[in-house]
Amino acid sequence: MLFHLLYNVLAEFDALSFLRVFRYPSTRILAAAITALLISFLLGPWFIERLKRRQIGQQIRDDGPESHQVKAGTPTMGGSLILFALVMATLLWCDLRSEFVWLATFVTVGFGAVGFMDDYAKVSKKNTKGVSGKTRLLIEFVIAGGAMAYLYTGELMDPNIRLALQLPFSDFYEYHLQLPIWLYIVFASVVVVGTANAVNLTDGLDGLAIGPTIINAGTFLIFAYLAGVQTSLLVNVGGQVQTQTLAEYLRIAHIVGVHELAIFCAAMFGAGMGFLWYNTYPASVFMGDIGALSLGGGIGMLAVLTKQEFTLLLVGGIFVVEALSVIIQVGSFKTRGKRVFKMAPIHHHFELKGWEEPKIIVRFWLISILLALLAVGTLKMR
Image (cartoon, rainbow, N blue to C red; front, top):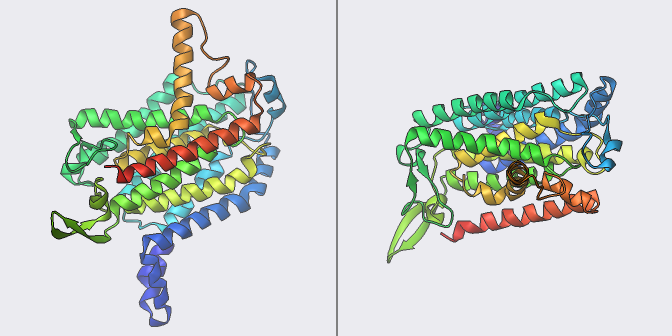
């Protein structure tokens, strides 16, 4: 909204021509990040106090580490603040004509609504069960499937790119997989739903999930910008000088208009940074399912819209390991009657081995940073 006001209206006046700088995505990326950070940071104390007054506190698992019992009653559902800051900053600074932004926002808010239902059930019933897993997954797949059906049956992407699956470390223009539309819709929906629930599983320690989320947002900001920006380069190809976009030069899919998602990513980055101030150990507020599911759904959608579904396995490696640890634990117990880990998700395993909570959190953050750097590094390995 501010983008259209400042650039399309006020910048037309000669005295305010300097406002034309907002036509550049880089300017709006910075503005969105700062706006989201300020909203999240400044509203944090007021929001936490409101949660305390309404007695919206975290319910702790009885079978969890004993050290977690002191966290009982800590305000939860703080993810609603992240979601508010993310959506507001995005709408203020994005080009509202971008369908990519609306799709990402729709899925993020939709998964946030599912998380709210789950959190509300837990708080009202005073237990950790919430909405049944089957019901939650069903709603999530309906939301993700609807978004994918719109994306892959419409004209939002070039037909040659829309159903193509970009493979890591390979030249997209030389080699990629082309899937049938029904299979791609299923695959992409699984990516979004799987990422959302993986982030939710990771959200078990103070700041553990929001740290990698911020890192993922920053990484996909780079991917979205490079894939969509129209900046041209003069490249020598076989002795001939050719004009190529950044995406073509890097041999990744060039998706016209997807660079607007960088504003969404910047808003996620800023909202997460502001929230981390209050969520870092010892946490004053937890994000709850409303935060974990919405952010996870948003990250999954970013991977799909930028054609980086497989790269997500690397960027979101922490989330992948957390989810796999649960799958392995459950599978082993059901088939062999034995547990592989002391407790799943895997961060609880390290807790029960005697690692202090801050040590686990910071080490997971460091691994996430390393994985993000490796993911960005693949751009010139094609």
